[in-house]
Image (cartoon, rainbow, N blue to C red; front, side, top):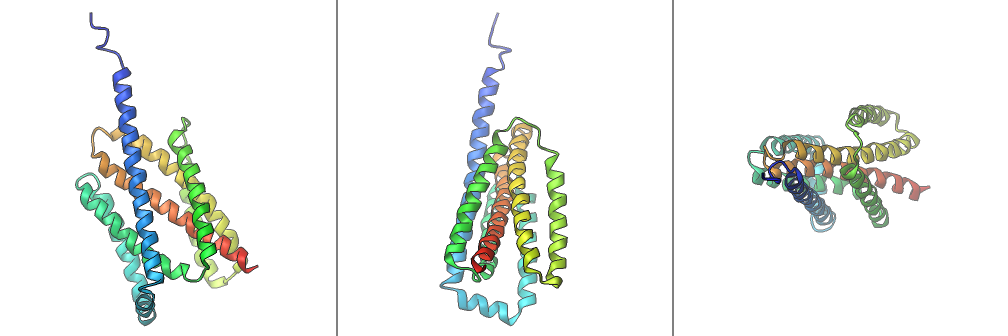
Length: 238
């Protein structure tokens, strides 16, 4: 009798090896996207600052619409091509990182280098902590996502209202709320992508799935970073 026929251990080992490979790809792609955005921000604020400012000042509404539409198109393209054409999806992720980097450079030009550096370090520590928790926890945290998304929608609507109120105090409070929301989303997205791989990893391209996860985690990180910039920037003005 073959005692190894029904032994689940080899399957378990293979699953864990595959999961480690998937997580390495996903966080690796996300890290590359963040570095591409960081380089784009640097170049946009130094070598190409005059050209970018001229384009925005000449047609501010059109430039904003083009940025928003292009980002949504690229997000849709990344998600649509992830499992069918991972290479195309990764290329779109890099292009998205460049576009987002240019947009961030406009915002970050209002702040000092110390504020930007401090915010980047803080966002990195918070993101890494929450991502590790989400990746390793054995608890079911799937229900947290719906509450976080509802809170994010509420924050978005309230932020639009505050654009008319122009309250600096409300904006400052919203920045802390934004950090809490995206810290939670970092944990939830990391957990969701791990579970998605364990459920569908043998049915779809793991590389494509890793690109999709990298996009979600990239958005979590950059939003964390931008909210920390607002917090540190507001504190430095006090």
